[in-house]
Length: 370
Image 1 (tube, rainbow, N blue to C red):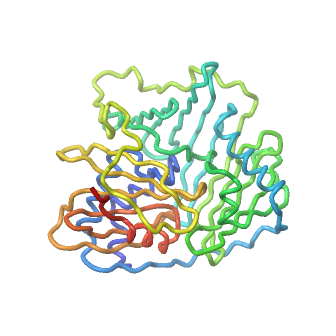
Image 2: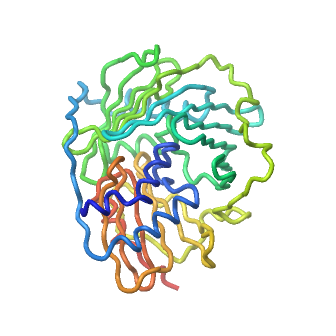
Image 3: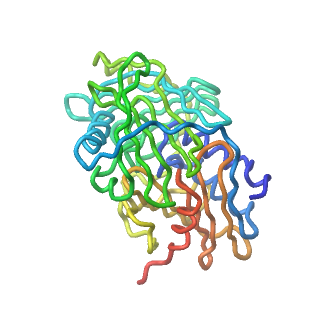
């Protein structure tokens, strides 16, 4: 992969935002991210791209023993439920070999069953994300703008496990590891080793009492650490007040609102596109149209997932003359991306999966028969 392409600013913007909210299929959950990245791919790629590997510190594997169903799968279920259902407030660090950011997250479910979450970036420009179930508000004080979107998946840290544990186990060898202690809480390691080259290895450590995920690590096929999330401060006392989940910018005057989805939710609409011959275990979980600021036509957005690893597929009218094909690895996250032309359209596929997976998915994108 050409170094100039790897350092292309919009790709870094994608990685930065995905580090903040970790929406693996929704790396581009906000319009400005989606459109800058797809536009960047149009101008950046003129020929076949190749993948790149980087030397990173080798991490010793966690000792583990094979589990046939039972305990390990029950832990995956507990991890999934805890991230969605219990109240918590804490600070976690997301790190890659070249970067790290600190984020405060506050989460609760009210008496009406509405899930509330507030995410505050503690490094760099002040940034807040407020979520109420699927409604998301991304506050950018420096630009006096709030981007309004809808969550396309439930994949946030610490809610990284979204699929059925039994289905996940069809594509990962699920193992129990040792116990550990993180942020003053005891936790249990669960290791998920991929059965093929289409996904990364995951190591998850869940708090013994609640099942909440305290640490998550992603490794490539050479056992090199690609990224990590870890709580450094955490309060599980259940004393989360609803007023703490409001944005301090919510009542600000003179802010601009940008919408990346139509006022009426359009999930699971027929975008006119489909992805065939998906890698084993992946299936489509969402299909919608996204608005494009400054452009008359919306962007098609499809999401495929194996319950743990998620990939976004974007299709838009091509902005370049001639065919576009390429791809590579982001230089400061495990995100890979592939770009190809289909007739007069550009397909951009990205996700926290090996390059072979995004390339295979991109190759399977076709127009739906009418």
